[in-house]
Image (tube, rainbow, N blue to C red; front, side, top):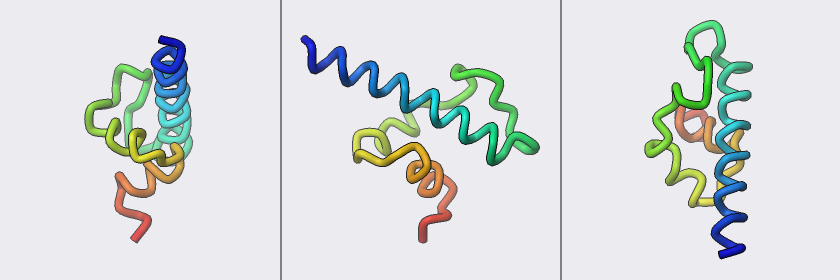
Length: 65
């Protein structure tokens, strides 16, 4: 149970970091007002792969070629 709780906290922190980075990188073109504005099922695979929030954004926007 402790591991599951730790993973949940890690996921939540990762999501918050993604939102902050998206606002910083794309705030002028993306409307990311809150954590609920992101399609998290699309991002979860990147989290499971162990990507950092920055790496996940680079991959999602195909900037890590």
